[in-house]
Length: 464
Ligand code: SF4
Image 1 (cartoon, helix red, strand yellow):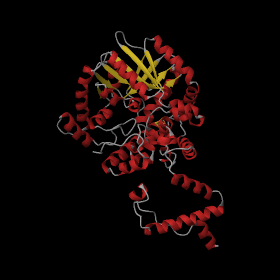
Image 2: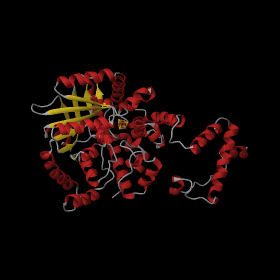
Image 3: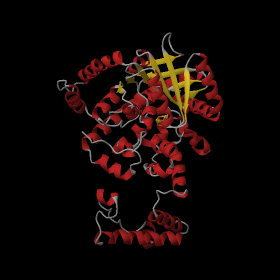
């Protein structure tokens, strides 16, 4: 089984190489992403109005992001009117403080968690552990990676890198169950163990897929029923929501429900859609609304689209880089193309400035995105900023390289001279005493390419 991944700002290339050296993990990942992409293509092809839905979703999200300040206030007002306690968190630290404080106020010692990427972003489980509170993930994939002591590799299917055999061995080791690689058996084992956790827990946590501003409704979609149980079985429910998860009105929801299931898991609709409108009698509901870097995106008008994301994961499945490298390679909670766009905004280019370069710009991500986020252009925009903004991550050698590159690209003579120098350099490199392996990660992991025959212009000239 792959080792514990390196997180928080691991340089992309270093982690990427680590991912590539895990053949079993890579195979599971490649097969699963291909399968998801196929489902996605099949269910979207059967809907003639799919492109219309995408345009509508894009327009609704654009409106929402433009009016986020007003909509958030409306959402809070409607939640409060329903007896919900709303807490605002500027960053992950404040959000964690709120959650631990709620747990302490309610005498909580045990928590069940439905799937929430925001809680991953906050590293909430570590904070629960430090506070002496037992927290158990209840989404099957999250439960598996939690048992394995790992991090999710995918935003929708967290244990995508593990085969059924891996999970069977894990359940045998951690839960004392007889080994089996049969899917249904494994699901039953997890269900049996998790059922006890629901009965013990004093608090349930969930994410929020959509918050409806006009009614203060929380909409949670899922396939396993675990989020519904996490919200409704324990007496206290805490929902974590990023500020961008709003929709203005309930009429806007159907198009997103149609898109999310199809793009996420290739289903026409996810199995469960929960609508939560306030706490049931005798129970408590808290909603923690989290910024954690999202309002930074609002400052850059060319980057607003990053906030349209509904976390369907389709761009990950379609991305050739993600398919080869896996989620850990990105070093942050959000991997794949949307991670390469979102994370530099959330944590700053100084920490994640290499991520926008983790793309071949083939455009597959933009083509599948159900809300029409122009991911390739977002990546180019971030690359431009990463190269032009001063950043402690950029060494003098990198700055010199890009300065020379930009100089060489500014005239045909300079370009030809630079290309001749590169060709000569690549020819000589194998004879240099400090090669191979001393030129960084790329030369350690792969051989230098053979220099091809004459350049096209030279060939053309010779041919007359
Ligand atoms: S960027 Fe688009 S395709 Fe990728 S996860 Fe977000 S909504 Fe899905």
